[in-house]
Length: 208
Image (cartoon, rainbow, N blue to C red; front, top):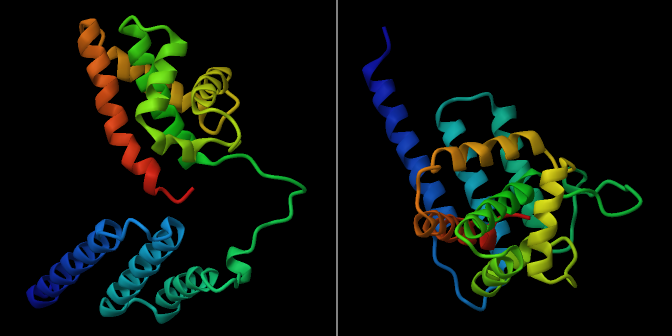
């Protein structure tokens, strides 16, 4: 039978960890702060909190140390250092964009499709999103490209299936619209606007 005292301590420690992680990723920052450095510090704080939790739970020391090592490696980036853990592989060019950035792009494309289904043409819908949500500039692969053009390009790539987990992303989009198939035009547009409001702050802070 489980020790009630140990169980209570574990619950308290887990609550402490949750609070520390919430603080790490939601604490306010100065508007003038470097967003990349802030993000790095957030991860350092979070990894340190996880390590402390594992230590309190008497997890094998080597496992706990791995989280401390990762936090230290991230912290070292601020001073120009790069441990083997974080050293970029030599690929002969820029590698493909990953799941996180394509997941965010896919959400933007679903919102864009909401606008189209509400009666707006694709160009104008992309322009409106680009004008209202500069946060999505971070999702562009080519900094010199327009956000409007990038949104239209993301849609083509997802539809063609040449992005990570393309089949799953298209399946999620089908489910999204199937669940809303009876909505009027203004309602489906409102769903797109709601999705954009949810995705924009994530895109602004994501580690991409």
